[in-house]
Length: 544
Image 1 (spheres, rainbow, N blue to C red):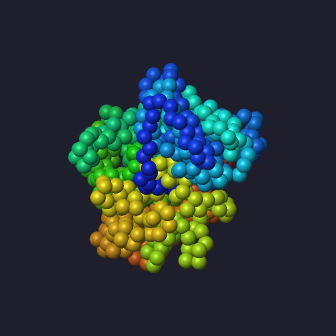
Image 2: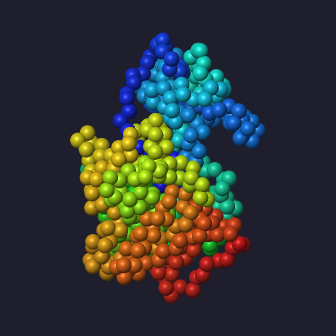
Image 3: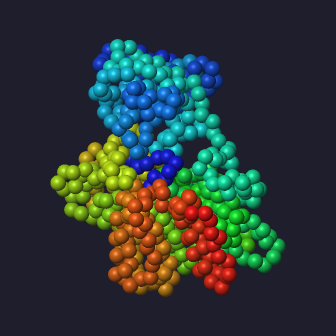
């Protein structure tokens, strides 16, 4: 699910493809509102992508801004209907040319002609990589300046794509939320942290081209390069919206914490699970390819041949949050003989009887509304519903067909359709669930079902290895599926550890006192105790 960086749920949508233009197009004589979006002649080369125009009420936006200045108009997953957005595909936009965007054609939350009359701040973005649903606007995207327009208006506003957003360097990290420990050790971490760029034979064979597995190896300070010491190793991955760049920040934090002895001396493999389709979650999938197989039979042996890693199952651990929580929970249950335990936090649904609150197995299941017609919520904050399932389906249908959370689930879980894309789990117009697709999901990826069906053969390698932590006020209702998974394991008589932290959300789960990563450190010491039960090393106390 969503992580604190950006993004939320999205949809697999085959939108209407409108042709781009090399020269100016003339607005037809209709009542729809149009925006003319141009590429300056100085751009130097043509551009293409998904064109988005965002609009928000000017008075409210300025009142909410700290200094009254607005330099960006964008959607927010926590207040989706505060910003309207319209879209179209652009195949080619030449320097000096322009395209017309019909703001009633593909729009959220409604056609722009139905917005309340008034003054609006608007901005255009050309999503050149078709990844807005995952990253938002990022390096290489073209943006206009914010302009104020009156809707409905009599003319056609013009927005010029005058700025190309820069691509940050991998180690160009924001320090706003870094602890002082991380800041102090950042330069040293850059020298100690090593990048992974591994071409997987299995994934490359699946796709017919070279597929790279990426991430970072974080070696502990004082790492013994020539001795006989073997270090317990933790494989960590991120939530929805993360990537190699955000994982560099994670790597720096881990190194700093080990330098301060707040973490035990272990090797951390910080993995990037992002892809063009969302997060592949290290699952073996008919759509994304054999990511779990590639990790366990290719990348891990390669790393263990290069670094002084403890290559026993008791020396390999997993941890991840959100989508990363599901990935690590899946890897532990799918490859129990490889890993010594997972510490998964706020994982995506592990029992499809509670898929962010929806029972996918119910007769006539619908992800938009219950049998009585009431809407299913999808995002909450401290008990207040911020968005419904249907709201996000409609928003992300406009933002684009790739990379969103719901589409990402389908790329991982669904069977493959004749057109090469995954079969949608639910109808994007009505919310109706396809029971045949759910049956496929259930057979292959419902973790609770898999445990129940295969426990006798899984128990010898899996019993006692599942550790799960989630907040009782999880932002995306993920505590519900965790409760159901616990009930299944308890019913099997399995040994497991479940912690439901009262009042904690998806975003503040790790905080302990003033330490934003306190839970991670606690879990790391628990892993170390499994790997080195005789060690006298203990967790260093930090200020509460």
